[in-house]
Length: 415
Image (cartoon, rainbow, N blue to C red; front, side):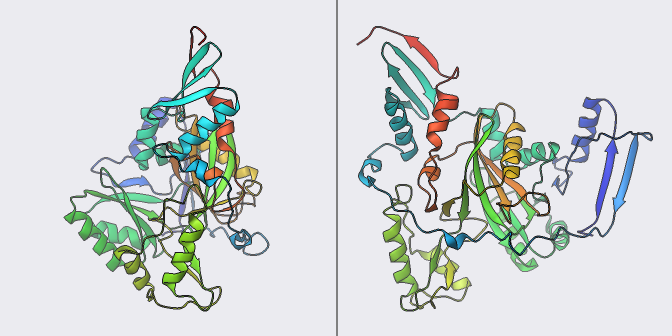
């Protein structure tokens, strides 16, 4: 049953234990298991029998607090930014511009040289540094989703319960869907571009598998759906810095404007945000289809305070809108985010995404999960959130990573 749990204590030489766990939790073609509720914790008790199994059947689900702990995002208002023209530079990415500005404030001459690399110079010393602090290994592990989840679970961090299936294994996928309490998230594992959607019935799952098969996609990843807020925090050199809520793009009714007019008003506000000014909400076929699925038309007038999403909660096709909540994220989750990055060898700077019902409350007593580690983070999103408090992330990346022994310095003649 979905609420059954089994605890096992495994003892032996470390490499033998890890080999055993890898065999139990493989994602080879003959085994669809990926992260089906599997977590590993260090056991500090005394083991007499060598291998101990304890079953907890029908264990009561964690009861989430729905009282004072609820985190209301409606309290935040849209941020207005000045000096918009400075951040509309032609040919320079916004995040790159933030790094250049930070170096210049510190007295360096800075210019981008190649991809994420920046050349900096001060007095007679010049150096090459980077905006990213990852590796090819880290990038590949995190982009594939399921290897990263395996590493996270090995460190005792909760991840989404899930399993991988071939698209032609429909019967097995349907059986697994029934174990996930009637709702799940399916990701089509296309080699170049993952597509994610929320599945609420068997017919939707069948259609997703059919469309994936037509596109030549071999695998889908099925995961449980967890209610909560999508929280993102940056981890820089072992420290959790800043925090964002990533919400789906939405409009709010005023009792007199049509959906089309509300979208125009939304776009007018987005032009005043350096991160969003060049990302308008387009009224295209996909958006119309999304609205129609909710029984809405572009010329419908929304009631006052009626909230309508313009993208799905799980896929965030439009990229979502961020809310800066640095002062509100509980330290428990900051520590967990640092642990998540430390689980990926060699990773020094990344965004950790988590689903958390109440981010300002301790992690104990609420169901939360780590969903993704982004090794190619866009720092500008922290500097220019849609709502809430901006956070100067670049300043910390430059101080804690760029201007350390990670920079290659060369002495030359003063010019």
